[in-house]
Image (cartoon, rainbow over all chains, first blue to last red):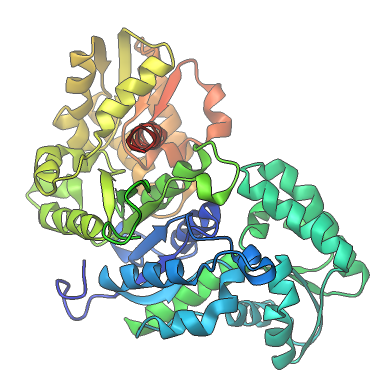
Length: 244
Length: 244
């Protein structure tokens, strides 16, 4: 199981730094299994999930000077490295505002969620034009996706200031409180507002948002929806399969 | 995050030895979150999931002399202990045929899935009478649940020999191959056959079976269904809350 004990040709495990929030972390671990083509257990990719929700709130730290989540995230990554992980995924968009520090905490590759989302847009044949982004206030204010999308040739559009609170924050807080049904309407309004402004695709750029917008209802929107949980899982599966 | 680094009053993490199969392991981690009452991330129970599917098949080892899964399971438990777990859950019923060896691999408490299922039957006000059991051939042949149920005052009934293959094995193999829809009918037939023989409750005594019988369809049966994933998650939540 650990790096020392396994056969040299065995695939290394994917280390998942979860807990941000815990429902997103566990859903990411589940989607890793569901999105992998496998006929029997032994064909699946080994994963180790550290789903510790005590990591201080990322948005508060970035925007209101709250306690930094970085030391707890660095400890989590070192724990995954010690447990034998060969690569790290962090299913939390806001945590990627500390991406360079997370990379600096380990000698392992750390997958980037915004790059995974751009790959996923291309997989859906969205190669240019307006792409809307929903996410936490911190992710939007610090431009995580705006930067990644513009570098890749898209035009990024984000919600109006009031709508960040009414749509994104309301939906994310409902998911974190386990009120999945209540999370749908604000997220749906957020998507519709971006489509009305010309977005051909919308990034669910907080790992709580894919939980608010269940797969079986995604056809109700007149746009491509890019799910940051699934995009990161697909990138992780591709990475682990290449390494093997 | 690890035992050494955290504050002495912080709750210890639940270590989850998953991978048997990986869908069950990830679903267990998800149900831990969904079944915990919490308003914000930080109220949830920290968990560490080792979801390594390379553990040799439990049924083959027990019934056909295949490679033993015990060394891989012991390594997994030691990994979870080193990562700071304070208690271990193993969301695989067949693995419990090695329960004494798993307990012997660690100084930590290891929760017992059959005891959790008996507690769950009582929670559903089933306190005596006939209880049916579905599970793997090994779990049924070695009497994991028959023993636990009879010690608790129930009369255990198990499928006829042919039905173990037609109902249990067919459904479990479909889940392991990701064919969740195909897993329903054999599992449903297995439940109905036990109810026809007088079972007032049926234990889904393999962690793949709760995935074959989705929550929203459980009202279709004229019996109580006890889900070994949820029963173990509820026992783990109660254990972790008491420790804190």
